[in-house]
Length: 404
Image 1 (tube, one colour):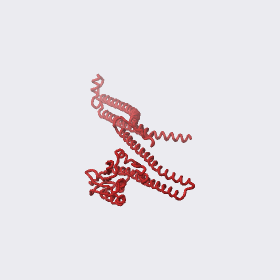
Image 2 (cartoon, helix red, strand yellow):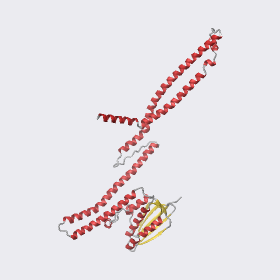
Image 3 (cartoon, one colour):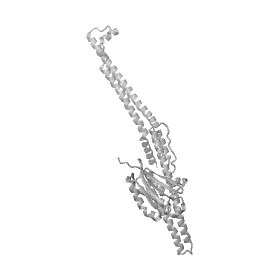
């Protein structure tokens, strides 16, 4: 165990030595030391050159200095030259000692500066990196089950605060996404539980009845078949909903007018069977950028709902057009309409106005939620205008594509 602990301690020390704080401190120290070394070296070289190029003995005659000092013992030119040589040697020795002393002081000052700059760099790096430490601490404390924590850094509006605010915004989006996912799982589980409960109850009853005959089993099988059909429709819609949540859909230029015309033709037979007339008024060349399969599915969901809620001999009107910025596709029905309260909930997942009849018909309650999801994924929206007893108009708005 000890060797393992020793290895772990060594690794921890190495990781500490490789920390960004130490690297910043070393960087500050090296930069400051390098600048100081250049300055001190320049001073030393300049002073050395000045002392060697302009000695006092070169500009001042030895004899004049002797006279100024009152030395009257100079008697011959040879003596003057000998004294001048001694003064020159003396001056060179003084200059040499001065340069040695300056060099010693410079090296000592640079060594102290190196140590001091590292200490100051360590402290300054700690101040600079303190917000990053707080960000890391909050990030470690956050889990997928609790995304309510925020960094909320505060302070001046600098790069670190921008990073913390961006991280907070990301946490907010993740919180919304996880909460939406939890609600979706709960709602889907609830919707699947009902047909499963019906299926199991009918099978348990008929299996527990020792006197059950073929008709009883047939009746139970019919109930089980309807429950299975509802679950199948729900699972299909769940798969579609999950598919349209993906962001990797293939987008391409699409002429929405052709798409609307083809979808109306596809529902002609279903409308005739229900006794509903489809009228359409479609402008030509409605350019958008999107996934044609997804857009056709959104319009098909609106048409299917409109035909279903319309009375026999009723009508459904489909229109499409554009303005300077948007392309719109509308489906109008003359059904019962929706109250203001229901208009707020109609695009929610698993919402069904008449839940009993909806389950009986095998509807999942995801159709309009998928329409809204597709519209928003294409940068648009879906709107609703409805009056009770008159009918409803659903409109998909998409950004108009302008080919530069």
